[in-house]
Image (cartoon, rainbow, N blue to C red):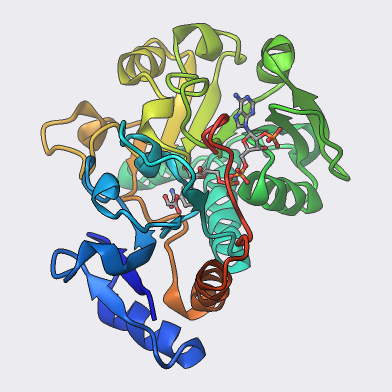
Length: 310
Ligand code: NAP
Ligand code: GLV
């Protein structure tokens, strides 16, 4: 039987091996860097395999991301041609992400930073109550995660819009698409939530121009990738008051360096890339299915486009 390569700085190989064996008792899993003969490897289950290694596996047929994003795979300039690239599409992760996005939306909408500040000053002060039906939430990305979050936020009565590359229809959500409609989408958005994949087209999408197209007093929530945000632009907009706050789960450099201004910024909340973690319990079944398909010469589900890089 061909072998499966496993590499991840975050996920437990023993946990994944145990769960995958429930579906494939004869699984031959090689845990990086003890991989034996590289020619045995036909399937790679990976998170951030260091660049330059894929081409060593001459019989590799599929690379599966140990997450929903695949940008860590496309950073390898020598990615072999003809190899399928796929990712997890896990409803458990979508639920986790929607909970995190909702948490941030409700935190800003219900004035949590303001009330926490007043509490610290021992001040009993009542702020004007927010109007949910007027609070415009905008989701960048209407894919597996963005659609779920948009539907759940809309179900609470918020005014929700989403922006995608191609035209979409999502019930209860105003849908914008393409570069031409980005400005109109930003102009109507008070709480901007990024659930885009990182690609050459989306890198740096939250910059001084796009931030200036949000109304004054808006918020930025980012759970896509740190590279979606130009940090200097976000910090400047927070300091001038154009933005009222930001909640960030992903960063240009992870772990976020201890001297980074985000840590101590009073308007920024920092999370250690935990909004939707990969979960062997929920995702092993789909990975086992993909391994089975690849080993029997079939095409696995959840492929990504090499051209679009997501
Ligand atoms: P997905 O299903 O591939 O959806 C991507 C969405 O982004 C689609 O709606 C797509 O538009 C849109 N998009 C891509 N390029 C665009 C562009 N140039 N202009 C406008 N829209 C564009 O991805 P997903 O599963 O929802 O995941 C999204 C991202 O979330 C991942 O790539 C990853 O970076 C991040 N993530 C983070 C965590 C975390 O813990 N922080 C966990 C999981 C995932 P179309 O619909 O038109 O194709
Ligand atoms: C996590 O960031 C993922 O892409 O699944």
